[in-house]
Length: 355
Image (cartoon, rainbow, N blue to C red; front, side, top):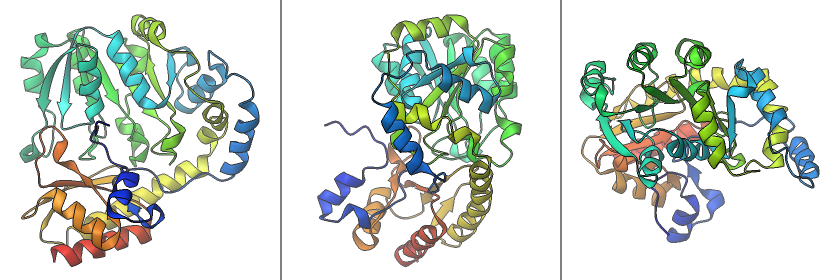
C-alpha cells in the first residue's frame, strides 16, 4: 500500500519493531488528548440511531454547526472529515490552483488527482514562514484559487489573512483557508475569517471536529462558503450518507460543551509555553513559534529519520519526520503537544539523545 506521508503510523511501526501498540506514545498525530464528558453515553445514542439511515440532508448536523460558528446553515457543507471536503472542492473549482507550502500534502494530491494545474508558492524558513503578498500579487494572473492553511501545518503559526483576502476579492480569485487548527489559537476571533464568509463569494473555509475535539476517528469536517456555484458543484459530486450516525449524534453535544472548549484552549495556551521553553533548552534544536497543538523543530546535526527511529526504539515515542513536506528538508521534525506528563517524557528523552 502506498505511504501517503502522514503521521499516526503507530500500527506499522509497532509491528515493524515488535512492540505493543499500547506502549507507544504517539507524538506524530496532532490531536487534543482530552475528550468531552459522557462520551460513552453519546456513542451509545449514536449506536441506537445507526439502525436508520442518517438524514441525507444532514439538517440537524448543519444546524448544530451553524449555531457553533454563527453562519447560516445553507452555507455549510458537512463531510467525512475535512479531507472529503478537500477532494470535493478540487472537483468543483477552476483548473488553476496555487498552494502555499510547506503544508498538508492532501491539497496538492487532491488537485493533481483532479487534473488541476498546481502552482507552488513557498513560505521561506528564513522569513519565519511568512506570506509574501508581493509575490502573490506578481503571480496573480497565473491561478484562479489560492489554498492556505491557517494556522499552518507543519509550522503552527497563525496569520492575519484579511489583507490576502482583500487581494483575492480585488482580483476575483478564490481564497481557500483550512482552519482545521484554528480552535487551538488563544485569540481565535482575531484570526478566523469565518466572520467574513457572508460578505464575499471569494472565500471558502475548511473546518474539522477531529483535531480540537480529540476524535480523528470520528471523521467529521465541514466547508463554509457563500459561493453558490461551488456549493452546487460540490453537491453534484458528493456521495450520500458519508457521515455516520455516531458523528451526527455527537454534534448535538460537542459544539455546546463550552467548558470543554474553554478548558482545552486554556490548556494549550499554557502547555505551548511550557513546551517551547523546555525544548529551547536543547542546543541541538531550532524550535519554531507555534499557535496550535504541534511544534516544528529543525535538527542542527542529525537527520529526522534517525532521531525518529532512536526515539521509537529506545523510548517508545513516535514523532513525525517532517522532511517530506514541500520546502522542508531531512532535518525537520514535528511533535504534537499532548498531555503534560507525556510531554515531559518526550522532552527528557530528547535531552538524553541530543544532549
